[in-house]
Every structure is written in C-alpha cells, then in structure tokens.
Length: 74
Image 1: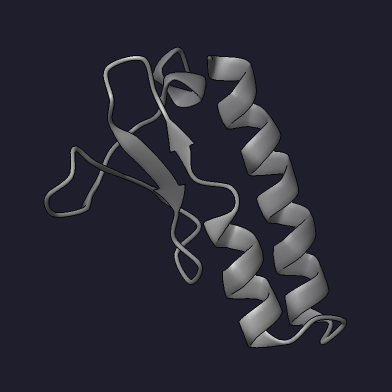
Image 2: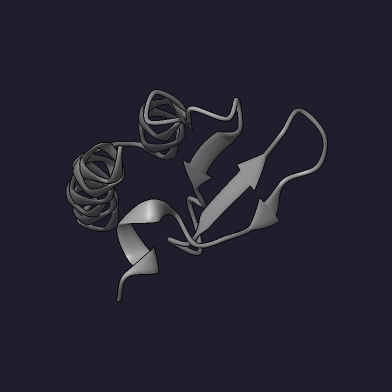
C-alpha cells in the first residue's frame, strides 16, 4: 500500500510542476488531483492538498491532516 502512496506523491509533484508552469489550468490540476484519491484497507480515504501538498484522510466525515504509510518510516 505504501507504494501506491509514493506513486501518488510522484504524480502530484509532476502535476504541481505543470500547474506552476501554466501548462495545465487550475481546473485540470484540481480534477487530476481528485483522480489520485486512495482508499486504504481500513476504508479511509486519502488525498493530497492542492495548495499544501500535505496528506489528508477521512473516514467519511471531516478531512484532517495525517501521515500516510509512505511517510511513517521516515
């Protein structure tokens, strides 16, 4: 599962670079980030914040910042 988080982090970095270089619009950027959401084995959803680059998780309620499995051993 941690590999999936790392893949999303890499894709996020590429998308952010494209957005910052104005190669994609804000709408394309946000829509692409929505496609990167992950559902873990415990049923929690994870996503990277478009502006912060930080991970957020939700169990169906509010979103809150959290460390994903890919960053727990750092």
